[in-house]
Each structure stands twice: as C-alpha cells, then as structure tokens.
Length: 460
Image (cartoon, rainbow, N blue to C red; front, side, top):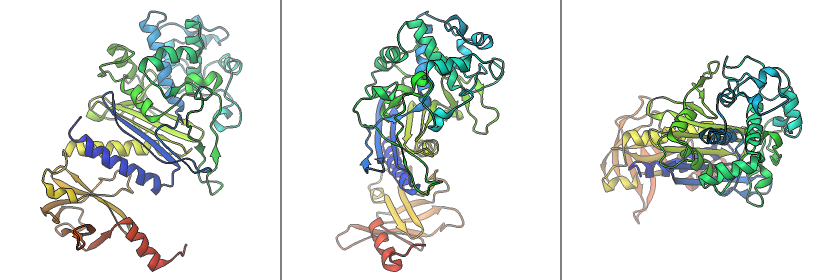
C-alpha cells in the first residue's frame, strides 16, 4: 500500500461522517480500492429514517446509471468475441426502429452520440409517476425520429442504453439480466451486485429519501421499482465495495479484468466533451471522465429517485473511490471530490511526521464556531475544517516544538500566524483541550455541556 494512504483513509472516513451529520443527510456508504484491494469500506447514518435502521456496508443501493458501464462492458465483451462490431447498425439486430435510429451504429449509441431522445416524451418513470418503460413503450418511442443526426454532439440517452440491452438479448438469445450476470457480474467476482431490484432478494436494502423541501421534512421513497426495459440503463443494485471492485478492474492498468487492456483504453477514452456544461466532463463508451494531470479520472454516476451515487477511478494512482447516498439530493458528487482532495493532500505532502511527539496532535476539537481537526500530514500538523467540502483549503500549519507545544508557522493573515499552539492535559496526563493562538478548543461532549449551560434548550 502507498505509505500515505493509511492516514489519508483514516481522516477521510472521519471527515465523511462529519459531513453527513453536518448536512443532515440520511446515509452514506463509501468504498475505496487500492488496485484490486478494498482498503476502506464504511457506512454512516441510516438506511431508513422511518424505522431507524442503521446503514451498513452490506446494504444495497440503486446505483442507477452506473448500469451503463456494466452494459458497455457487456457489449465490448461481445465485440472481443467477434459476435458484433461497434460499427454495426443497430437496425441489424432490432426491428421496428425509425429508419434514422436503425442507421445509427452501436458505437454511437454506446458513446451517447447517436442523437436519440433522452427518455422519450414522458419521463415520469424517473419522477416516480409511472412504472419504468416496458419494451413496447420503449420501441414506440424509438419508432420516432432521433432528436439530432448521429455524431453531431454528446447527448445522453437512457433510451439508447435500453436499446443496447435489446441488442445483447438479440445477439445472445438470453435475457439481458441472465446474460449480464453470467458474463460480466459473475466473471468479475461480484457477490453483491444485481441488474434489478427483483433479483436482490432478502439482502439488506437502503431506502431512498426525499429532500427536506417542500414538505419541510424527509419522506421515504421506496425505490423498489422494477426497471423493466430500462434495466440496462438504470436498473442495477449493488454495495459500494462491489461497485469499487467493478470499476477498478476497468482501469487500463488493472492486472486482471474481463476486458483486454486495449478495450479498456478505448472504453475510458474521452470521445465526446460535454461542451455546454462547466464541469469539464467527457463521455467515452459507457464511462464519464474528467480531471487533469495525475488526477484524471473515469467512472460513472447515477441518480435514481431517492439515491445519488458516483464512482471514479484514478489510473495514475491506481485508486478507485465509490460514494453512495440514499437521498434525492445526496452529496455523492461533492463528497467524492472532497475525498479526492484529502487523498491528494496526503499524497503530495507525504506521511505523518515521524517524531513520536506528533501522535498527540490529532482529533476533532470544538468551539462555539464549530469543529477543527488536528491532522498530522507531512512535516506539519494541519488544522482542517471538517465542515468544508475541501477541509484542507487554507488550513493553518503547526510546526511542532515539543510534545505538547508548537507554533502556527503558516496561516491566513486573518488567522493567528506566528502564535503558539498547545495541547493541554489533566493531572493524569490525558489530553483535555487545545489552544490555537488565543482560541480554546474542547471535546465534543464538553462543548455540548458548555452550550447547554450557557444557552439551555432555547431555539431560534
């Protein structure tokens, strides 16, 4: 394992649980892989706010459009086996399509550049207003002309990936779910992944939740909808660890995979940019990508009613991060970026200080203004702000001068640069509080007691 990874993971888990509490989110599951090994697997909060069921790493989530990356791997396995080609017209395999839809290639559909409708004229299936499309409704929608000519622009299409599910069925003679389980899910060795909710069985399953508005409170969104013809676009259910395992083996650098290195490079290549958005994202063959330099990533995200999920692989570092949330405004995107910020900070600054005196300089400390985290990184102790989505942004640096004493040697001028930092202990030598400049920080329980004593149970 990378020498900086263990301390980074320890802080990442602590930060993520704080973030969940801070933002009032129901639950969050996270998994991080180093190569093909899961090195962090954790779950925080509730699987069901109505019953109070605690979320565990074994709970399944609706991972929605992550399904497209499974379907993409399925198509590419058929290409490697010589059973179809990315240049084949979809009309070679599926009858009843509009002639312009039939003329699009499998590669165009796979890269979301075929110009197809996103969800048809009524996307109530994603608004929980109607069941997910069956084959008849899907085919009726695809009997209409495409929105744009093929290969004109990136245009995301759930209907397109549903169509690819039908192609897999036509080529293999099996149902999509049956074939994808046999040839993708099982061959990767995934034990907690199913193409649709009806196959999940009696395993624990996280419930979805609404946002707090407009009701002023969250309600349960069952998210037990069968995905029918949309399975290949949005139906999958999985745990965070299984999702991380799956995407890790798609890295072009992975030692073991169900696809060849050449195919994986093509699958994750930046084919189409999302030019009209400001996020710097690109689409490949069933994968989203972004980032720059050594932190370029590929992966996918998903939004199912009551769930927001995201996974990213960073090939240069051989690291995969998966964050699953069970709220319709879940912060999977922001939290994954925050986790990468933490990993990047540790990777650039190195491991914790070697001197034994640094070991007491850790933990979360409180004042009325909130929490601050002492985090040994590299040659300094950083004062992170766990309420931030980038907790090390402008973090003050403490240079240690002794076991319980240091100096704030780098900080914003609005902070306390040049002033002392001190650990304060009780008579038994146990750490009691921290002073940073003139500010006095205490433990969470002591802060609660102080606030109750001063302010009582008054609320605004």
